[in-house]
Image (cartoon, rainbow over all chains, first blue to last red; front, side, top):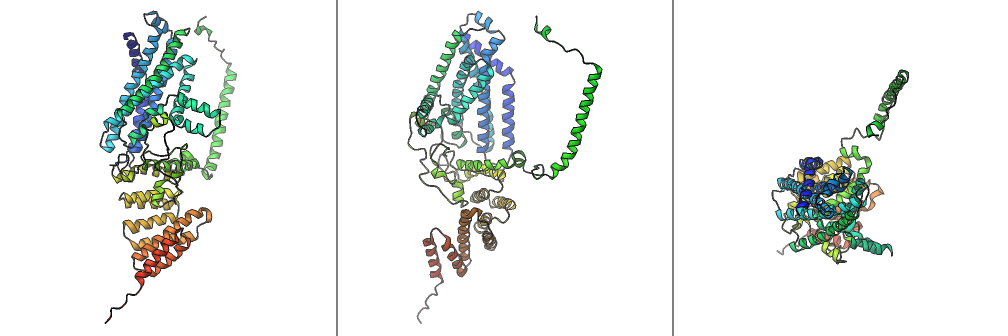
Amino acid sequence: MNTTLAIAGIVIKELYRRKDFYVLFVLTALITVLMGSVTLFHDTHIVRYLKEMCLLLIWICSLVIAITTTARQLPMERESRTIFPLLAKPVTRTQVVLGKFLGCWLACAVTLVVFYLFFGIAAMSKEHHWPLTNYFQALTLHWIMLGIVVAMALLGSLVFSATSSNVTISFVAVTFILLLGRHLDKVAMQIPQPASGALQALFFTIPHLEFFDLRDLVIHDWPPVRWLVCLKAVAYAAAYAAFFLGAACLLFRRKAIN
Amino acid sequence: MTRDTAIRLDPPKPAGQSRVAQYALLLLLTVCFCLATDLTSWFQDWQGNRTESSNLMAVAMGDARRMFANHFFVKADAYFHSGFYPSIYDNQRSFKTPHIAEDSGAMRGKNTGDETSFLGPPRNWIDSFGREFFPSVHTHLNEGGADGEQKEAEVREILPWLKLSSQLDPKRVETYAATAYWLRRMGKPGEAEDFLREGLRENPGNPQLLLDLGRLFFDSRSDLIRARNVWEAALRNLQSATAEHKDQNKFVEEQLLAASAKLEEQANNPGKALGLLERLKAISPNPQAIEEWIEGIRQVMKPKPMPAP
C-alpha cells in the first residue's frame, strides 16, 4: 500500500508542477467572472445561466485534466526510461498501475475541490445561499465518475500505441456516453434488427457516466438526490473502475516494456 | 553516430541567389500592398461586409446565428420547466410550442398529449435509475419551481436565453413578445417597453409587437388612449401584411380584435366593441364564446324599463 501511495504522490506532485491546471482554472474563472458581470434587464439576481456555464467549464476542464494526465503516465515512463529503475525496485507492475490510477484520481479530487469552491463562491455572490448538500453530492459523484474515466484512460494507454490516439479516443468515448448514452435504447427501439440488438447490447455494456452528472439538479435548485441512490451509483462506478483497472493490470503484466 | 552529428547543415547559398530571394520577397510585398489598396475600397462597398454592424454576434457568425436563435428560445423554455424537458429522442408532442410562448400569447399552441409524462414508464433498470439524476418531474418556474417553494420572480432565469435568442435573430418577433410578457409578469413594464421598442426598431410596424406594446399600456399602465392607438395601428398594419405568415397573422388579428373589444367595453363604447367582436366572430375558432360575449354586451346596452309611476 505504501508503494502505491508513494507512486500516487509523485503523480500529484506532477499535477501541480505542470501548468495545465492553472491555465484551465484561470480560463474558467475569467469566463465565469466576465459572464457574471453582465446585468440583464436591471436584474442582478439572475444566476442559473452563470451556474450552467461555470459547471460546463468545470466538467470540460476536469475531463481534460483527468484524461491528459492519465494518458501520458505510462508512455512517459517508458519514453524517458524511468520505468526500468522503478521496476528494479521492489515494486510490482500491479502496484505501478494502481499507484498511477490513485495518483491521477486524487489529483482530480484536488482540482475538483478548487473548481467547486470557486463555483460555490460565484453562485453565492448572486443567489445568496449555499446549498452545501447539493454541491457536495455534485462534487462527489463527479469525482467518482472521473475514477471510471481515469481507469479507462489508463487501460487505453496500454492498448493504444500513441498518447494522442488514447486521448482522442477517450474524449470521443466519454463525450458519446455523456451525450447519447441515456438515449441509446430509445434509438435501438426505432431501428431494425440486428442493429437494434447491437445498440441494446452497447446500451447495457457502456458505463453510464450520465448517472454522475447532477448539473441540472444543481442549476435548477432541485432537492438533493437520496443518499441510498448515491451509494448505488458509487457501487456502479466502483465495478466499472475495477473492471478497467483489472484489465489494465493484466495487460501491463504481460506487456513487454521496451 | 549521435543525434547531433546526424544533422546535416546545407552549405551557405551564394550571395547572388540570396539577393534574388530578397528582391522576390520585396516584389511580393509590393503586390500585396497594391492588392490591399484596391480590395479595401471594394470591401467597404460590399453588401456582405460585417464591419459596420455593432452586433458582435452578427460580426462573428453572420446569418448562421439565426439557426441557433430557436435553440436558445427552447432553452429558455427548458429553464421555465427547471430542466425537465424532452430531448430530440423523446416524445415532443406536448412541447411542440414552447410553453413560455404559448402562455404569453406569442404563438398559437400546437401541443397535444400529457406534458407531465413524456418520459413514459421506465424502460429498464438503467432508465429507471438514471431518472434519479436529472429533473424528471414537470414543474413551472412561476408556480413554485423545482421544489415547489420558489418565488414567482424566479421566472427571471429564462431572460438571459431570451435576450441571447433575440440577439441571434432580431427578426424573430416571438422572442420579443414572450420576453415582454414575462417582464410584465415580473413587474418590470419599463424593461418590457424598452425591449419591445428594440424589437420594433428591428421589425418596424410589426403587428405582434404592437399588440404587446398595447397590452403593456392597457394592463400595466392603464393608458387606454395609447393602447387604442397602438392596436389600431397594428390592425392597419395587419391589412397590409403579406401572406407569408398567414396563420400567425390570423392569430395576432384574433388577439388584437379581442383586446380592442375589451378596451372599448371598458371605455364605455359598446357600439365600437360590438363592431370589433363581429369581426372577431368571423375569424375566431370559437365563435360560440364570442357570440356569448356579444350577447352580454347587448344585455347591458338594452334600455332599462322605466319604473312604473
